[in-house]
Length: 267
Image (cartoon, rainbow, N blue to C red; front, top):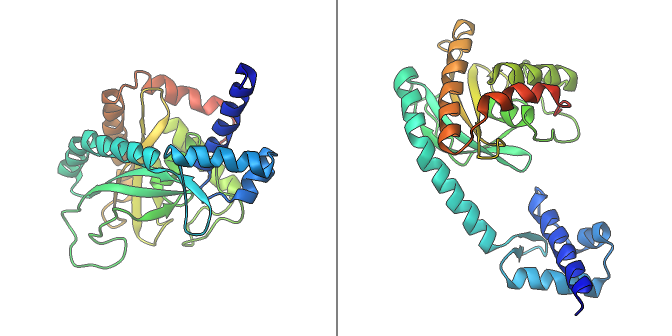
């Protein structure tokens, strides 16, 4: 194989891998053929190579997703993030007594990956009680953690936005205005937008390159997390998130936050 042909094959395989990894759902062979324009035989050969090296895997339905090599790497990265964030969750819990969560972007939703339980409410059902959020997925547009990702680069899912409550920002213009506020102040608020009576504030956690890799949140009932406390809770969360970001190697938390509003709106 010539150097040019070899480079072309690598580029094609890399393009296929990127498409598989960035898709929220498993990608079918037909979808990959349409997007790549490759002949079936060439596409099959490249996919087989990626699968053989553990970079992609075939689902039971025949689609393609991230393979065991990348899944293991992601799992290790999440474990390191959870360990690094634990002291900050505990500190917020000690100060507020409310439920503290760590969340990451998961396709077009957000998944909670760690939690310190609320010290006030026990024995209740629903989101407002002392619920284990770990593993739960929540929408981007009506959760504080989701708004963090939307405000700092995540795309808003296409189609109609689900209205969970009468206060859900299902209008894209209103949501865009709210995301502007998130970028200006550095923390997000969802007040009875995911569920009636549930209030949450969240702030971005950044990696070494300044990108938002997770969100830290405080949540509780509106009877305690009243409007007069939102600013204080938001700043508490932002302070801990900024400290964690610095520990993870982000050296430009403030400049990143200041620069974001000048970019095109994420919504």
